[in-house]
Length: 93
Image (cartoon, rainbow, N blue to C red; front, side, top):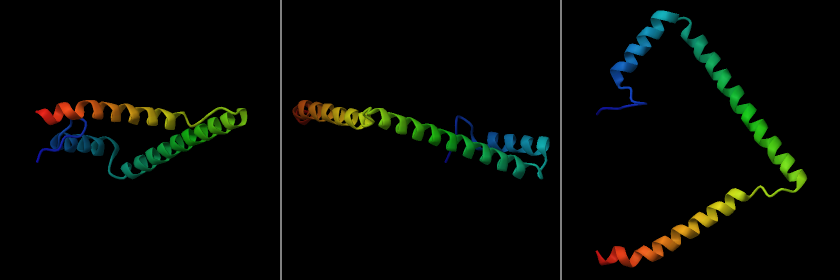
């Protein structure tokens, strides 16, 4: 089984990991991973704060925040119409 992750195969990942260990050393890798984890957590918290601030300000001004639900309803309606239209055509073949 050939697993490809971002167009990089298993042996290439092993070479990259070997180079990382050679450059940073085995004792620095957990510190680097910990720092990356903290950085990702800070970005996630910042985006959640921004989303909450936008939602709160839109509710204060009275803007409708359920636009995504309306769009999904319209998309589903169009899909149903297409299925109704193409249903007889598919059955004929």
